[in-house]
Length: 112
Image (cartoon, rainbow, N blue to C red):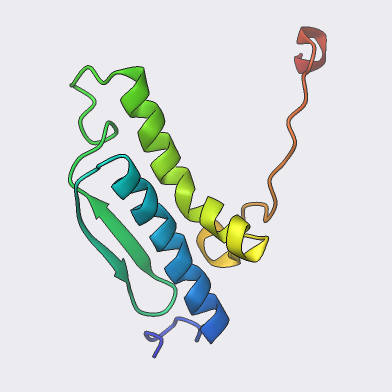
């Protein structure tokens, strides 16, 4: 049941959100990240709560490898959606494009 002011999502959307959160969990287990929980919340909400990450503890001198692993963890939710559904859910984007953009090389003069 959706909270007041929140639209009712379909069963397919709920499954896609669940797979998104599972994507984060798979990468966390692979990299042996400690986490408090993975939650499939009400309506459009899901969350995975890590115990610590470079963004929360910037005062520590994190090696580049650790930062890279956390970047993969952040990207894993959407990556799971693309792998399983061929698209990401419109729910998490809130106005951002629904497909990856190709970024080509640009010359310095074209950036002026």
